[in-house]
Structures are given as structure tokens and as C-alpha cells.
Image: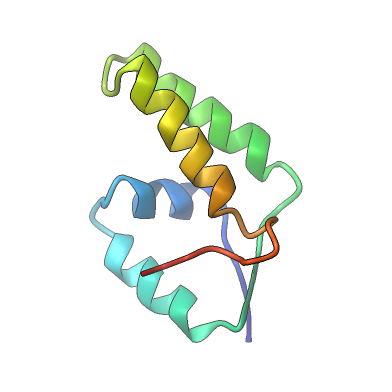
Length: 82
């Protein structure tokens, strides 16, 4: 089954928010996880807003973006949900 992840789901998972376990459970069912073309731009924008709101530090901002891109469905390995 093909699953599509958007940035809102990725943020839920990355920040272990309320719906993260539901998203992780659903993504484990898929054998191929893809993302919209704007995934990278949207992810960077959301993480930057968390930083500007002082929810995360500058170093955390960079790390979250790297994590979100390294685990991105756009990468060959797909999004890791473990």
C-alpha cells in the first residue's frame, strides 16, 4: 500500500504530539511512503516558525530540519516510523 505523508503528519511524529502514534501505526502499514513536492519547503517553514516562537533553539531547529529531511519519503529509504 502507498502512504502519503504531509508536513502536518511529519511534525506530529517528530515532536511526538497527540496523533503521532496514530500516524506511525498507519505508516507502518504502507510499503511505500511518498510526500508532496512541497514537503521540504513546508517542513523548513514550520520548523523555522517553532524556532521563531522560541519553542525550540537554533540548534534544535537545524537538527529537526535535518531529521525531517533524512527521514523524508523523498529519500530512498522512506520515512522511518520506529
